[in-house]
Length: 349
Figure 1: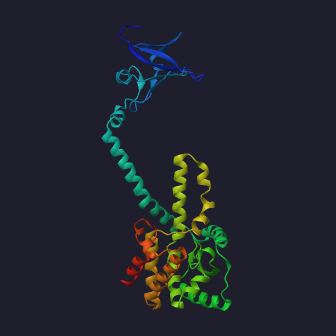
Figure 2: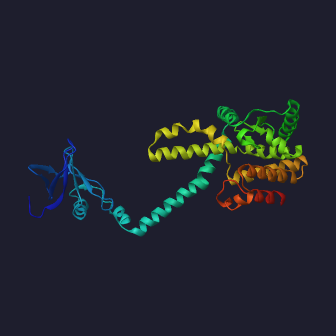
Figure 3: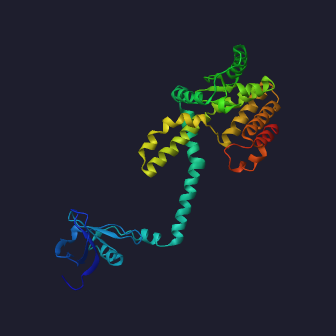
């Protein structure tokens, strides 16, 4: 081999064992010679294939089935690749990008902004489109699982008189038939248990009122306002959208982190998400808007919604041993808009 041969230092692994040996690779215009301890191997140039340079990480030269040579002599190897003596792709631009801190910082910023945008706008938009495209029949299985889970949280069968349940159900269903025709709406009553005064909307159109909420209301117009709000969640498929959003995030995380079992547990976790439902701010306000339009069409005054909402909020804070003022300061980071904001927005329309 001529004296002008390029000399690369590094380590050699023959591919037959995990052992790596200190080695030298001498390359000229006609052939290459590998010296690794007492081993000497001659290669034709076409037997050498250099992987692309990425920063200053060690570079691999594959030796055509005879193992691989790893080196940090980047400049010499770049010259061999550029001159065509050694096969490989000259992607020096990747190295240049990674060698400049401001480029790396810009890339990180783009990644953070892109990921944030996907979570804030992208995933919700995809979830909304998917939820609105699904026929109502497909939500039955999820709704059944959800109701089974919720039943475990609730206190059991309603203690309201059957006549009282039928009276409220008849009023709600008559309104739903008029203002939301075609929706498979169903109204159920249960003891609130640990949920207390509350109402829930399931993906299949089932709306659950707790006994405590019925008792909290001062008249049926307030319950009609709550029904209008929950019906808004059904019309806009908010619970289904929440499930789809959670599914997308779970699947993306399982793919990213390599945990395939996480994706398989998505459907099983759906009832739990519904049982502990916390709609986003936009969804709550969208349901409020629907309730306002519904109540206007029914001839109900807006204060019925405001009154029951404020009373409901007060009851929940009293149960938690706090006041609404304790929660107002945290509203900026909350998934729910503050009651005062919702009331002011509702009454200003």
